[in-house]
Image (cartoon, rainbow, N blue to C red; front, top):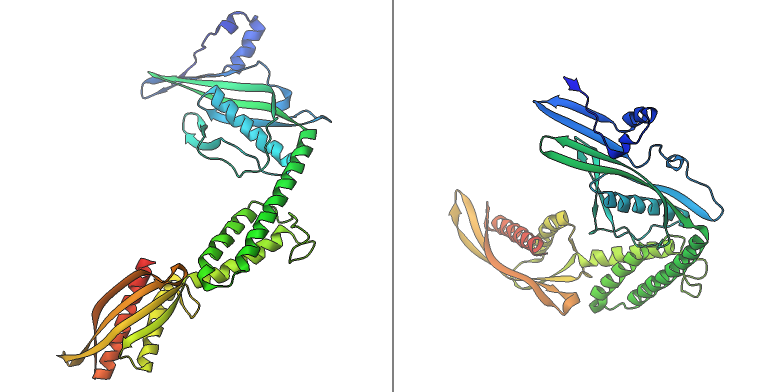
Length: 373
């Protein structure tokens, strides 16, 4: 069963009868009977007639205009903050870059009010233009109040007409261009400094410098020019440098995840060593760890001694003791992990059982290597 309730406001007492009919339209009141509880929703606009700029922003030779909005904000000021941030982002497109924003915007759903927008000061957009001269010219908002029993809730839909001086936009573009060119130059210097050193001991520093250069370049448009007096020559832009940095990083990151293997104090014959490396590689490659001569890490495998055991279920048993160390060549051969153990292999004869023991050792060391990476 639906009923209607009109909430009187001081404003309505001063209205003429015709205006009262208009007010009935603007102040939408709905009452519903749900589980025996009456619910009242009142919407109060800040002005009787919505401004025309909501749909048609002004045009000006001096300013560029934008309408920012917020829906379902928990307070009027929060709605204003969100709407201004929204307008500033629109105006930033006129400058051609993203903008600094200390306001993070989160939207969540509320069955009673639809989408509610809240403010968080913990997040911010990517740093770029600083539109510090955004002016708020006009405001229009609608306050929605809901009452149901002891529940009283308010939400605000806010729209702001904002403007930004076009001459300021030109200055901001110039400032951004200078800042971008400087950042591109700094990234280039890092790249040159990193790649000029070819010593293995410097690979860790190389990785860090290239990563930092990539972070810088990710903030720049590809069209940002590099200094003309570089090894790349004139007419080269940030996009070209990004590709060079990515290529070098790929090489270094591959070495970063590569193991050299060294055997010492072992009774493995050449075939068994090949078997060990092959089995080790099968497991390591599942985690993108490679085996090669120019890797960051050195795997030292030692004490590989066989002990022939008895017959178990008609199979020959062979035990294989092992030790291993993983040394970081980029960090003065520091031992990053180590271990030891004994595995067993079974076969139709001692040779077959020994091969199975070698496979078991390789898989065990590979698993421990992955776990410690």
